[in-house]
Every structure is written in C-alpha cells, then in structure tokens.
Image (cartoon, rainbow, N blue to C red; front, top):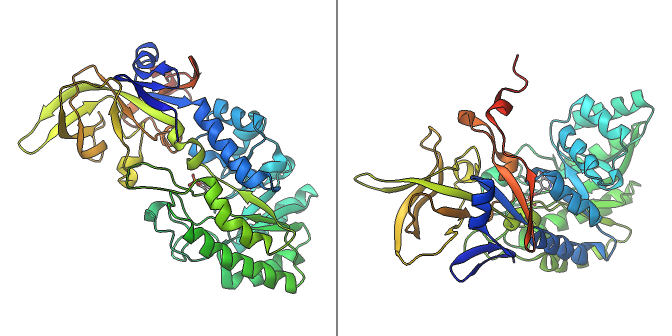
Length: 414
Ligand SMILES: *Cc1c(COP(=O)(O)O)cnc(C)c1O
C-alpha cells in the first residue's frame, strides 16, 4: 500500500502533483511519501513490537537523514553494515541500544567505533571476525555483545545477487559449525554471547522460506541451551519483498509475524529482532525523470530519459522490474519501448521492451518503487551529480537532500 495515486490524469504523491515537484526541484528527483513510510513502520511495530520485539531498519536500503529521523521518532532501531551507517544512525537520533551490526568485512576501526557507542550486538559472520572483535574489545576494556550469523541453507527463491542464506554465498556460518563457534565465543574473555542472527535474502515474496530457516535456527537455539549457552536475542533478519509488478504478491508484516511468532513463542525467553529495509521504504519512494528524446532504430523504440543507472542501478544490476507511469496521463495510446538513460553503457536502462504510455519530450515519467536501494546505490558515474530528494507530507513538501553540483564532483580531489 502506498500514497502515489492518480487524481484525474495527474499522478500525486499524497496531496502534491508529481509534475509540480519536477518543475520546482528539477529531475532526476527522488520523491518520498511520509504517510507511506509511517504506515509501514506502524505495520511492523504492530506485528512485532507489541510483543516485545525490536524493529531495526536496514539503513542500506535508504540512509537519508530525514527518513532516519522519522524512524527514530517512531522508536525504531537500525541494522547497519558499516561505520558510516553507524554514524548516520546515531546522527539521526537512533538509540545505540537498538543497533545491530552485520556484514562480512567489519574493520578494527569500525568495531572499536561500535563498541564505544555501545550497540546492541555485532552480528558476526566468521570465526576470524569473532577473534578480531574479542581483541578490539580487550584493548578497549569492554565486553562485546555478539550474535552469530548462521546460514540456514534455504533457498529464498529470489535473485541470486540478493540471496544470502545458501551455503554457496559468503554470508554467515553453516548451522553444523555453529555449536563449535558458540563454544569458542562463550570462552572468549571479551565476548558476551547475546543472540543469533539469520538473514536469508531480499525481496522474498513468500513466508515459507522464512519459516524453513527459522525452524533450523530454533532447533539450534535449543541445542545451544542444552550445552549451557543461553541466547536472549533472536534476529530474524529482513528481506520481506514489495510489489514491483502485478504478479508479485508479497505478504504484509502481520502475515510474516503470523507465520513466525508462534514458532518462536514455543522457545521461551527470546527477544525478536527484525531488520526490514525494502518493505519499509521501497514503495514509499519514486524516481521522477524527464523524457529527453525519442529514437527509433530498425528494431526498437527508445525513450531516452534524464535518469540513468547512476541514479537507479537496480534494473542494470539485477534486471529488476520497476513500473513506469506518466506523471500526466494522455490519450495518445501506448508503445513498446526501452526506457534508457544518458550513461555510455548498453546496460544503462530503466526498462526493456516495456509497454508504456506515449510520452513526448519534456514530459515526466515516474519510476515506481524506487525508495529502497535507489538513492543509496547511486553514484557519480559519467560525472553526473546525484539527484535531489524530496519528502512529501500531505500537501507540503520539503527538500531533504540538495541536488549535487559540478563543484561537488571534484570536492576532495587534490
Ligand atoms: C540488506 C539486509 C537487510 C534488509 O533487507 P531488505 O530486503 O531490504 O529488507 C537486513 N539484514 C541484513 C543483514 C541485510 O544485509
């Protein structure tokens, strides 16, 4: 559910026509709907937090300070994967007691930073990382709270690049090895064993893989308890999908909770941590882009727009589908076209062989579902300044990040 809807022929973000925003702020432009974000946060809180769970937003999906502030105000925590994300989360007012830190390559400096800030726990991905955390904590005279990330080896049935919970991927430790790793962790002087973590992938559209993974992890928790290792936190990861195309019908947070919490309740004494990114912010954002030119080759129609793979990488990187709608509907009928950007790469496209409204030069297209892994994956490739970002709240709108300038491109160069 989101608040981008047509009124008559004009597409609105809440109470504001998107065309007006494109005119005022220029394109390419990311536009977010505050009510949509709040709606999703509340859905997660209702599903998981009323029973004592902790909601940790995955910053890598979208780390704009205004988005994070909204989450902080709603009492959400953060799932971070770098020191930079920790910096952003703290700056936005997110409580360190609700921050979990995952990722296979945490550096000693990043570990020290997170220890000094007293985060909830490190989600540890390897034995060597565990040794490193123990040693850094020792230097600081601290005890590092950890969860071990286990790889439950289930197929989340999603794109391989955003699939993590299978043995062939770099994430976590095999369930069979976990007992040994927990034993080692429990004996380390500067480690406090606090929890267990799983995150099997992203854009999951069914509850079943979550359940399959969870069953394996709960089994492991029971075996650990039998050996005297008491875990208090169960981090079930993120990964709930959103509806990019009409064929996708992902469950809502309530359905996810309904599938998982009864299993978890059977093992008493566990605080649940959930780490959604995409399902909070994905369909709460769109990318506005202007049609620059149209072009016909022998084989194809191309709609050339002013947003490229540097602005929204997902179609190029994953072959991801994003619905593309005109900001103003017309009666010119439709065409099948590739929607491409200005970048000098054939892989630079927003849509391929797509049936699309007939657009004219200067008209605005809206790339839907661009709130997650959109701006956060953007770059300056081809020396393109990054887009601006705007938050809509009812009839009001606010610039939440300025468009970069040419000067920004060379800032820091010596
Ligand atoms: C990316 C990531 C998430 C969030 O995934 P979504 O699909 O955006 O919900 C959660 N946890 C970890 C460890 C991640 O790497």
